[in-house]
Length: 222
Length: 222
DNA sequence: TCGTATGTGAACGACTTGTTCATATCCTAA
DNA sequence: TTAGGATATGAACAAGTCGTTCACATACGA
Image (tube, rainbow over all chains, first blue to last red):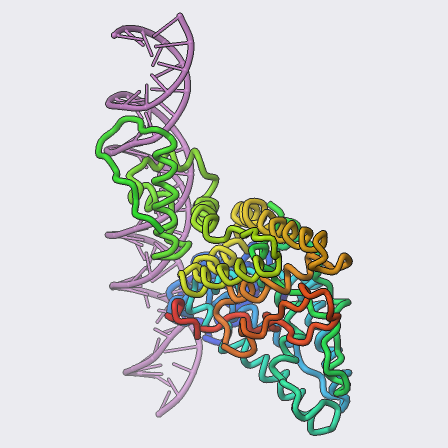
């Protein structure tokens, strides 16, 4: 995440676009460095060099601000490429998504955002409407194109395919502190894309009863 | 969850076991009624008729207290029966678990506890060590007995079976605010128990990329 | 150039979190 | 039965957070 915009001292109005960019940048940095609970209007205002009053005006809650900061950061990383070969494109995007989570440090903030959404309806709504559902629709569009090009069976259930392709990585976020048992991206299958096999031989890793959290995840160790 | 123990007025020490029971009962009721964030030492003390000082001594955090209150409530509901037919027993227990979540109101507090665990290492540790891993081990024990009795293939991967049987219900907890797409308990399979089929034809519902939360869940609607 | 809109920082009130301390009761040993 | 030690108790306190108000300083458009 990029460096914060320089805050100028003293009163007086700055252009809204400048303030907005500074606030989102500061919120994103606090989210990554200190976690979703550290994203408060007071702290973001201090770090962005903006007014707390203004932030209260523009965002409904710190959670919504944290979510928007995350969306802003992730948008450029999670683009869907379009080379004409949908299968290859989805593999590239899926790889980018997994790297974004596992290697570029997004897993912790995402799991905290998803976690916080469980008790923050505003954040839950923002997540679903501004991130989750739009991204699902992007994936479905790519799969529809594959169907039109004969690269995917016409009767394939697109939601199930989206779940199966991206679900394991996302389950890792929503249940990130789990014992390392059966979850592994190497076991994921792209078989639906071939349009030939009916059976799902390698079930993707998933959450289980009663064991969604543990302390084996390094970033979150107490 | 049962009624609170009557709080007696005035100073003076009460027996620790009485105080403990009152605190756990109060915490459980606040968790169910008002959510995990309402479980604070002040509120629990007020509702239990106990001293905040004492609660600070006995529990490391409100989250740990909330988790223990939940464990206390769930223990009796989620026992594993033992009739000799492991397959039938697991179906009964799985049904009790799903009813506990969906019909007896446990889904919301569980998803909030799991969500809060994402940013509360103490709660995460308590959840894993005192609830998740012990319950997983209980399930594995039952499956081992099935293997010994020839009711389950000797080479079956017990962790994968546990994930697949209980995972969907638990995924519903960890990602409870999701659009109703492919998740449905009716699609779960008990096929591993027959020891005959290698393929998993009906993949259990699971989380997907970017869409783990939404506002379609009634209890959590803003 | 002027008037309107709005970002600004300080101040404020209400509430929460966590600790301290003297007191009242429980419990165990003699 | 009594006495002493341990501990649950409620009030008080300090520090910090949350959310709002308001007069002021600047941006911006006509």
